[in-house]
Length: 634
Ligand code: WTA
Image 1 (cartoon, helix red, strand yellow):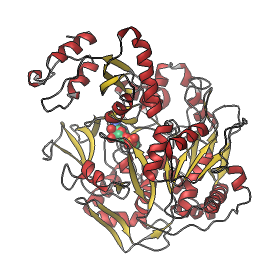
Image 2 (spheres, helix red, strand yellow; image 1 turned 30 degrees about the vertical axis):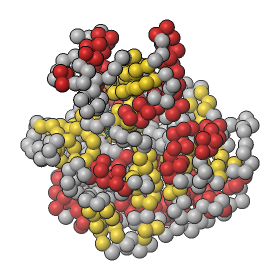
Image 3 (cartoon, protein in one colour; image 1 turned 120 degrees about the vertical axis):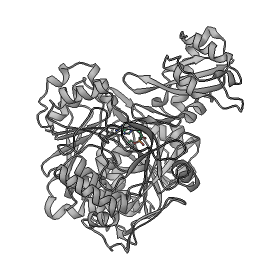
Image 4 (cartoon, helix red, strand yellow; image 1 turned 90 degrees about the vertical axis):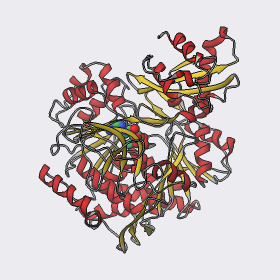
C-alpha cells in the first residue's frame, strides 16, 4: 500500500530520506501499484533540454490501477457518488465494479468509433458521471484525453481542438447550472463550423429532453453507441512515459499551452499526494468541488482518489443553487469527511452569511482543503471556525497544472497550520526561493521567486506540439530548476506562503488568464485600437480583470461599448474572462522600446498611486497623470 505518513516524526524522517535518495523513495512508492512490466530505471531527468522520464521502461495501464486492482477488496464499495444540480433529482452512485463495467463499455464504444492508442479526444462536458467515465475510457485504450472546461466559448474550444489535432469531441446536449441551461452541443456545432478539420466524430451524451440540431455525418448519440458494447475491455499496455492527457492552461504570452502529463509518474504522485494530504481512511467520503475541466478535477476528483480506492463525490451544480446552503447541505447529506474547494467559493459563501452553514450538521468533516489561489486571512478563519468548527485542519494546497499534483501543503493533524501558508513540501519536493538573478535566497523571513530543484514524478513533460515553449517558460530562466511563475515568502519557521504570480497571468477565481490572451480577445472588437489588461484585488474573485482601452468610439455610447467588449471576450474565450472594469484612455504608458508598463497600470487599477517608479523615462509620461485623474487618484 502507498505510504501514509502518520505523525510529524515520520514526516520529518521520510522527507529527509526522500530528498537524499529520491530514487529509493519513489521506487518504494511505485512498487505498490500494478505494473505489467517493472521499470528498468527509476528516472532519467535532464532539465536543460527538458527530457523527463520516470519509471523508464515500465509498462502499465492507469485504469487497471484505478479500477481492476480494487475489485478483489472493494468491488461493492462506492467509487463515484454523484450529486445532481437539482437537489430533488436522484443521487447516482457507481461501485468500483459498476464503474469498471461502465468504463469498459465506453472504451469499447470509442474503439468501435475508430479510436486507437495515441488519438486525441476532446471532452467538453458538464460535471456528470459520464465525464469521469469518458476520461477513464480514454485512458483504458491509450487515447489521450483533453478536457476543455464547459464554460469555454466555441472559439476557445475550436482553438484547443485544432492544437491537439483531436479526432473526436465528446460532449453533452446541455449543461445544467443552477437555473440556467447551457446549450453545450450548439457550442460544439459552432466550434466545428469555425473549423475543426481533424474531428471525425462528435459523441453526444443526452441530459435534456429537447430536440437539438444534428449533423448526420459526424454526430452520434452515446446511448445508441454504447448500448450493445461489452462490459469487458482489456486495458491497453502503456509505457510509463506514454501521454496520458493534455490539459490547456494560460500562460503569460500567446495562446494557451497544452500541458502534457504521462502515465506512470502521474499515477504514482497523484495517489501518494491524495492519501497523505487528505489522510484518507477506508470509510471516508471525500468531496472536491472543482470542475474536471481544471487540473484539480483530474488529479483530485478522478485519478488520485480512485487510485487510492476512495469514494469520490462529484457535484453537477453551483454553490448557490437552490440557495447558498447547498455545499453544506451536500456535506451533511453525504457525511463528507474531506472537503476541498477554492478560496473564491469560500469568500462568496462567507458573504452570504453564517446562518447557511449553521443550518447543517457538518460534524463529519475531518479535513478542509483549499486550492487555486492565495487564501486571505479572513476567509481562512471563517472556513476554520464556521465550517471546520476549529476541529478540521485546513490544508492550503499549493500546486499547478504543470506540477500534476500538490507540492506544498500542511499535512492535517501532522504538521501545523498557519493562515495563508501552504507551508511545507511533500516528500520528494525541494522548493527553493531565488532572486531575479537566480541566486538562492537563503534563511528565513525572506521573499523570492519560487522554484523546485529536483524532478518529481508528476511534473510537466512538454507543452503539446511546442517543446521549446516548455523549455523557455519553465526551465530556461534558472538553470537546473523548474520555475513556477509564483512569488513566495518563507517565514521565521521555514513555512512557505505563496503570494501570487510574478508573470502576466491573472488568477480570477482560481482560474488562470493570460493578460495577452484577454487583450487579444478585446482587440477583436472593431472599435478597439489597443488594450492593456491587468489584475486588481477583487473581494470575491481574488483578482479581477481591469482593462485599459484606446478606442475611436464616441463617448455617448460607452455603456453599450463596454457591454460589447465584455461580449467579445465571452465569445473569444468564455464568460470567466470578461473584464470587471474598463477604462477608456488616450494612450498606454510605454517604455521607449514600446513595452507597456503594466506595473504602473496594475497599481493604478488597485487605486494605489504610490511608488509608480521613475515615470520620466517613459515615452509618454503625461499619460500616467491622465489615467490617474480618470481613476480619481493622485
Ligand atoms: C495559484 C491549480 C496560493 C498559483 C492547482 C499557481 C495558489 C496557480 C495556490 C496554478 C495556493 C494554486 N496558494 N496560490 N494554495 N494554489 N495557486 O494551474 O499562482 O490552475 O501558480 O493549478 O494558482 O493554477 P492552476
